[in-house]
Image (cartoon, rainbow, N blue to C red; front, side):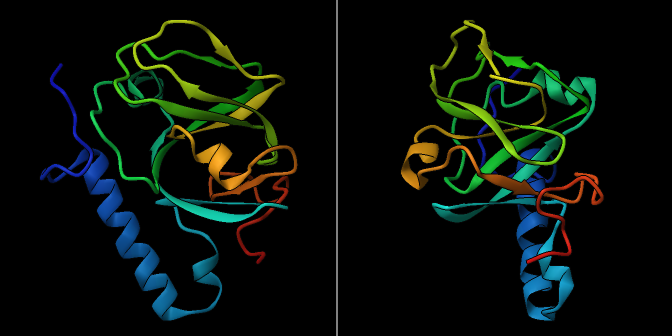
Length: 173
């Protein structure tokens, strides 16, 4: 497996998802209306600390979840990976073959904050578990949880979260 660089010229993979996500966000914002509320290529987070938006690649199959951000050498500050699991349960990640330090944020089936593992050490195989059952996991660059002041009460919005269960549904602002 070769090294991956987020931002390198390639037609598919993470950069392709980033380009598609940025394009979709721009088009949705230009169009105005409800379409701007949610996009498959990004996640929105909010809490008493404010809000943030990240362009994401989705890992929703066993293969993409197993690959994760392995071998990525760098990633833009407002990018990440959203892991989508079919059910809510205790989760644990590790940093095997992961070359960049990450914040790993766990969310329950509604998109509500469960816990975070901050500043995960590259290549470390120590288990980094959630503090409770989680269905969604967001990996972003290390230090951003602290920089934004994210914590309990933070919610994530993405179209993959069941609208009827979502703490912050896609059509809500």
